Image 1 (cartoon, each protein chain N blue to C red):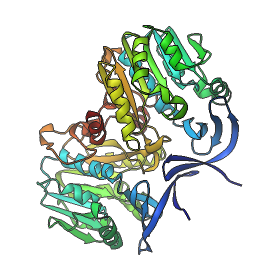
Image 2: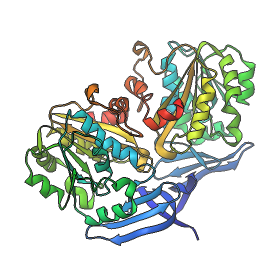
Image 3: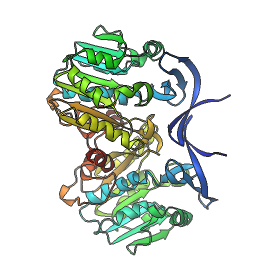
Image 4: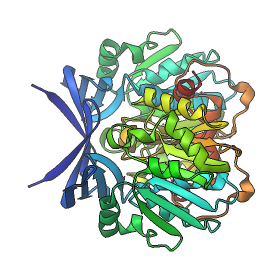
Length: 276
Length: 276
């Protein structure tokens, strides 16, 4: 018998993956969690049926959402990750020796537990003494910590359902207050090809809060459209023009100093979307 | 009843599209040709079950495979398209007033006929008096025309089966002889994420023939991995550093002068692939 899973990426189009086995499937307090072993992409985490990360292509997302803000900031000491229970962002943060503490604020402890168990390549640094894990609501955590973090990374699920509150102007205002005076905020902000209105709204919401707001793109095979946007809001440093002297050699499969800058260069259809 | 088509993008992973109707399906002399109307991407051309182009995302491929070489060359007069029977490349070439003649050399006349009928948005310029259509074998055509074209665009299917001869060193040598002294060659060269060995081989084959060989990437949602490579071989001009003064305003949805240069900036895993 062949077993396949199917992810509807947009209405009337889906990706299907043949799987070897289901490693875990459970209804947590917050979502339907599954980790399956696929033939094409290795082990894969799904939340509410949406692919979150896979062993084979996770490097693109985790490197780009982490190194772009961290290398833009000259010397980040305190970093907050909202969501990101799989640990991939924490793993990348730990490559920056300037970071003294990285707080992971994940609402669903089951994500952390199951990723520790089944995705050790991704969760490997969650036990690092520089990482502090807080299980709870990101919105509340951000509200209760003012002027505290140099970089805040919102590594959330899509802006529908559970993570909806992590997108939009009122949360970005709280984020801004939680950041230090030269702080930087970044979030994954969906695909401009399939969801142009979402990208546009999120970008404009961030733009109302941050003096410098930019959008960059990365090519992630298992995400819908294969081409993903990230929105970055900064109080002082321009993320599209980082000081090259700050960019030291870091072991990566996607990120490098040149791709850092090139990722902010946008095709016309995306440029027009956020400039109108 | 729901009708879906399924394209196996790599072993054990597939995209599926819900369709409204099949507009044409026939076995031509060379391949299984189908044009279907999908809900998510509009009308879609498939050859031997492989998605070639769709109304919704064709602009990325056609703009990038055309404008990058044409803007790299200062004043292309004669352009050859090998394959490309849908007409999308011809449509983009016609946006360059310097072009006096564009020859389309397509082996399968059914592709031209059916695309004229069902994909008029793409085939619209096939009747342009500056376009000359030749139905026949591209390898033979290239062999019989020496020192003739400023730009040769190989817009072929994948390097398995019918189009296999359009990839590799011996064809690239013929291409080089078919080009003028400052000529430029470009081909679609698959996805480095799924087929790294193919990308590497094709790039190295081209590099043995052309003084300047570069690889660039474009984000195409309906192609496997969503992130497609193009290999460009040039006798004189560096495609990664075009003279900005040559780049005039052209109506495009993806291409612009900045994305031209940024597309040549590669993530580490691709850079390492072609540098080793």
